[in-house]
Image 1 (cartoon, rainbow, N blue to C red):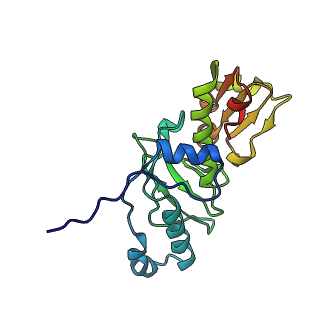
Image 2: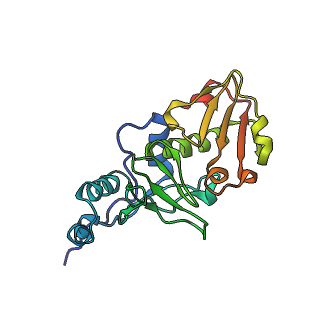
Length: 221
């Protein structure tokens, strides 16, 4: 009696990521079995969910479903495993769907919004990055910068507003919206505003400053 070979747990990074993020996904990530959500299509259509929204969730699942990545430095680590689920409509007519379950009990969930942004759904919808690619790029950059920085400074609360970004340029690949990354001559700055915005809690503002970086540390690709 023969048995089917076990699927590899080593993920293949989706096309379009930076070299740094590809390495992060394929070296630090784990590929787990993913749910085939298309089997729910007829049932979801019967509940009034538009076909286009089901297709959008299925496309997310094809690209990211089943990918487990190391914890993020904020948001209690981010989703445990990226995975889409049933789309849900909002009062303003937009549709979103879950991006994966939380690692711990949280006051919000991780959601893909009507325009494809990756964000949190707390008291209000708060997009963090313009796409899931941006979220993964941010995770990869945090892991890279933390590995190569000579110093890491964490600032919390209203003091974040005083962080001087003069001479810094935004890091485009993270597709920052509420959250963003900034690159200077020898340092990187990550600004995390999602919880402060989504929970109306300015004390949750957070900035991480990675100092003493050389050219490789600043870019990593």
